[in-house]
Image 1: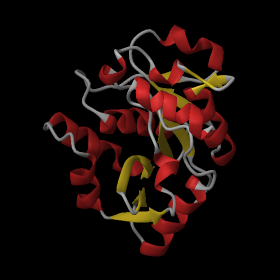
Image 2 (image 1 turned 180 degrees about the horizontal axis):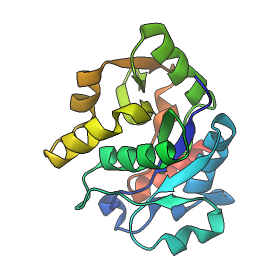
Image 3 (image 1 turned 135 degrees about the vertical axis):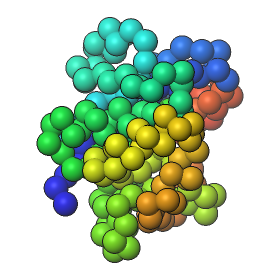
Image 4 (image 1 turned 60 degrees about the horizontal axis):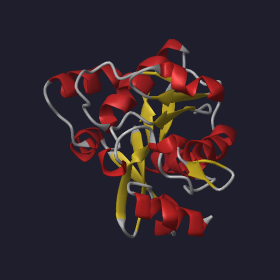
Length: 195
């Protein structure tokens, strides 16, 4: 398998943070999103951002911004689909997704996901810790994009329901804190301390 393309999922509504783009909030001398970019970029062949609304607010990042193709905030799977369509247009066979509000995820995320899929012979792999699966951190084949589009159009929203239908490996990571995500102002304070 060649190096996958990376897609950062930033399409959520950030309601617990009061709305807006959580990823653009300051963390240390940077932003949450820049920490995510800095971790994912070295692991993938190219990088895009899945976000809805005016893409101009991300111009300073120099990344392609791809919007959901399914209307009405259909959840993370809608962002996965947008990424799969973008990657397929580039001729790529796989993407790896990461959440835009999770600045400390493992620096070996991509090779571990690829290894898990290879060892089990499954098309999809998700990150997991003792705390459970982390479904926004996954390896996804572009070949399944039409199936995913049909499932979303039929109303499916739960990542696990769709991944389990196709066979899904778990890439086990030892540290739950690596997948700490910033949902509230308190979480942002915790992330500053973790930095």
